[in-house]
Image (cartoon, rainbow, N blue to C red; front, side, top):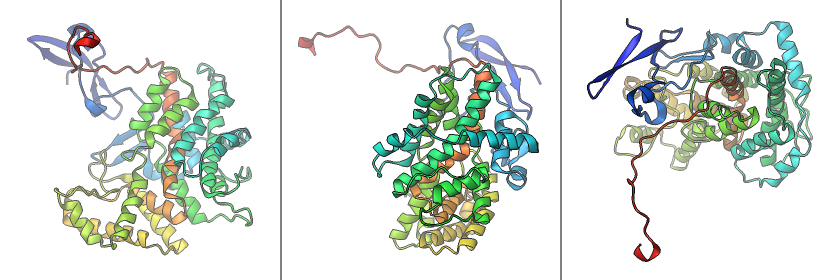
Length: 428
């Protein structure tokens, strides 16, 4: 195969080098296109066919249903590693040994205290404020308490910034939920594991001793691992392009959180529960809504089924389905909304229309079910997603800054008015 691509424009041919990835992905390097052609650019709304960077973090093959972090399959990581190990892997490139992991966790715990003045910021939000707006604001506010920009050329400074956000962000997540519920703000327990401490900070009642449920802990640990990174999606690209201006880590993460908020991205698991609640309010007839989903003239969309990247199946869904079943069984939850979810799942897996089109339940479907069963408010689902995605965002920001990537600056094709002379007020 040639190592170049030829593009012909108005009878003139131009050659551009090909870039080949370690998994044999091929891209055409067009960074000189505009200069050598005298102004021609490509146009690709949504960047569906445009590579914004070269990255060594996550490999995704949507056609084959493959997801790997730093070469390790998502199946192996979900079964054999915990979330903190995966976070270290994503950020630093290798799985930690026992000593390294212990130090990493200890350093994170040292940074888990949040300045008390942050509570004043939380107090200023009404209880009705959406948790994603709150967590984005709190993450951005961390910059005020850590005003010095990270020196990306210093390994120590980078490490300190990373453990600082990994220590403080779970506290802010828990505070965001507890504020909404009118509960006192918790700092957690440094004797606990990372994810176990998150659960205690979120759920401990002031008049009760908190007892960890291992089934719940394992399910949340897996969910966070499955959400930890997903290549160049909307929020990750936002983190990278924000950081490309040399904006700091915390504010770049806040930008990513805001991008994640949308219902077409991280808000999808919230949309699943809202759909299920709407079906319940309409009588709970799942067959009726399956028929509506198959009717092309009906605007109803079945949320949580199929995936815009995975054309066969979502590998994360296969893993988390088992955890969802275990959580529902262990907690003995009686909830008509979750009964509807199980009914939709069964019908979709057996209905030829959905099977032929590979519209299987995805990770958003099962994560919504698990969070609902745990008693996490629907508005908090995307905040939990951001907790899982945090290490991926950090890894992507770090890779972008250390790679000395240029500032992001997309081009456009202008379609507005051509030159018009100015009209004075009396002639308008």
